[in-house]
Structures are given as structure tokens and as C-alpha cells.
Amino acid sequence: MSEFVRNQWYVAAYGREIGRELFSRTVCGESILFWRTEAGAVAAMSDRCVHRRFPLSQAPSHLAGDTVVCGYHGFTYDQGGACVAVPGQTRIPRTARLTSYPVTELDGFVWVFIGDRANAGSTRVPRAPWLDMPGWTAVSGMEPLAARYSLLVDNLLDLSHETYLHGGYIGTPEVAETPIVTRVDEEAGIVHVSRRMADAACPPFYAKSTGITGRITRWQDIEFTPPCLYLLHSRIAPVGVLPGADGADPDAFHVEVVYALTPETEHSTHDFWAVARDFALDDQGVSGFLEENNRTVVLQDVAALNVLERVIAAEPDGYQELSINIDTGGLAARRLIAKLR
Ligand code: FES
Ligand SMILES: [Fe+2]
Image (cartoon, rainbow, N blue to C red; front, top):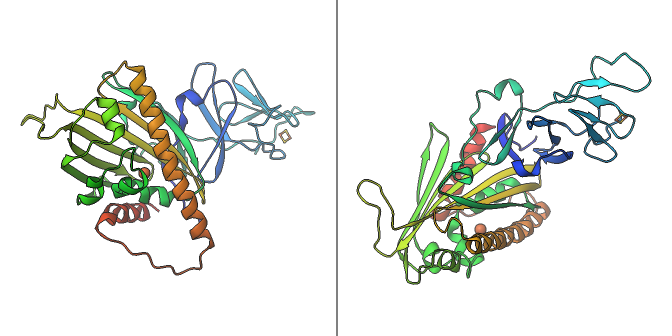
């Protein structure tokens, strides 16, 4: 049986990736064609021609105004996926229609609904407003992961691995040493994992971007909305600097680390990542540093998870994992994901 959680919204692309070129991305095993109409709306439909399955993203398939022309024999489809022309006859078969997908653009992401489209309107699209909000500057990217989605969930819900896998970038000893607090909001379906370090070394990722030279108070507050959106609210301040009683926090640096985890196939995942900050907003040097550094960190995870995928795929059934306190967030996430199936 498929492991995919259906009847959910998934991030398929950044808005900047979709234009007047035919674009294909596989989400939850479904190969989907994306393009922008002349009015600027995103259209999403099956990337397989109903005639002989030729991928509509494949040249010489092309856009003609607001229609897609198949590059094999010329079946032509409108933005809703209906066939409007076939070669050699005027009658268009009644079943000549591509599956089309509900799409919405929010916070710079193109979200696509996978499942029964009647459920799209009543299903939440989680938000990451910092990616497209005054007062914040964001950098972002996407790395292909040759590993199953569940391995990325485990990875992101347990940040103690920063100390070992990302030492010299975002990891310091205090991350692994500091216990976490895990809380599940059952009603909202959200996992919260907090790790608050009162006196920690400042890793290069934050020292170079904020300019802080000494030790820091470092908060990591994770908010995971299964199946797709992960937020890490990160707060960095000199040791002892805390928010005021009214919540005002002018002397801290805030970073919102956003991941969208989108299954591609049963054994591969689209790893969308973004880093938004509320300081040095116009500093291109800081943007370049954070983009480069975060991509490096993501690629460290990708390398490790790609190895794990090969290990798991090759092992006999029945391996017994051992879980400890640091895994409570990941285990809670697994439970909420299972509930969505
Ligand atoms: S495969 Fe598309 S028109 Fe024949
Ligand atoms: Fe990591």
C-alpha cells in the first residue's frame, strides 16, 4: 500500500520556478505539469497525454496561448485539462481530459492538492509568512533527496544531530546536551519541540550573520504541521538578554528556518528550505553567506539520509530501532502522520 498521505496540500515549487515554460514535478508519485497562464495564474495538470502518454513537459510539446499542445500528435488541452483539439477529426472524445489539480500560491510557494479535489477547499494550507513579508529578508532553495520522506521528518524533528552532523556550521555541544520539551497540539495537529539554551557557544552560522562575538542565549522552537510544513523559530541574543514581559524583543536576532517536505516517490523527497531573518535586511553579504551556509547544511543532511535510505532499502524486515528522549518529537510526528492516512 502507498505510504503517501493523500488529501493534503504539498509544496510543489517556488512561484519563481513556474512561468511560460512547461515545468514538470512529481509529487506523491504523480507526475504533474505546471505552467502560468497569460493572466499569471498557475495551472497544474497531469503530465501524461491521454492519447499515448507522451509527457506534456517534453519538447516539442509547447504552450500556445493558454493551451498546451502535445509534442507527439498534437492533442491540445486548455488550462483546466480539457482536450480542445485532436488531429484528423473534429469530434473530441468525451474522456479526453487530463486530471487537473487545485493550486494555490502563498508565501512564495506553489501548493498543490493531492487527493480528492472535493476536499481541497476544506483542507488547511499551512503558512510561512516570513518568506514574503515586510521587515524580513529570505533566501531559499530546494535540494533533491534520494531518501524517503519519513527520514527527513525524523531528521528535522531532532536537532541534536546538529552537534555531530553540522559541527562548524550550526552545531555546538550545547545543542545535543540540552533536553527538549515536546508538546503535541492534538486539535490543531501540530508538533512543538523546544530547546532553549541559556548560555551556548555561537556557531559560525549565527556569529557571522549577526556579528555577535560572545556566547549566546539560543532558542530553537520547532512547529511541524504534518505532512508538509516545518518551521524552526530561532532566537539568538547575547547571554542574559531575554524578551520583555510584553513580549517585545528588540535586542534579539530572529531567524525563521522553513522546510517544506514533499514526497516525490516512495524513496525520494523534495527538500525545500528557506531562511528568513529580521536583521541586516539589505545586506547582500549576509544573504549570500546564509544561502551558501544553509545549502551546505542541507546537503550534509542529504548525504547522510541518502546513505540511510540505501541501508534501509537493503536490510531484512524486522529491524528494531531504539528511541530515547531526543526522539519524542519525531515519534509524535510519526503518530500525527499516521492519523492523517
Ligand atoms: S501522445 Fe499526445 S497526442 Fe499522441
Ligand atoms: Fe540537519
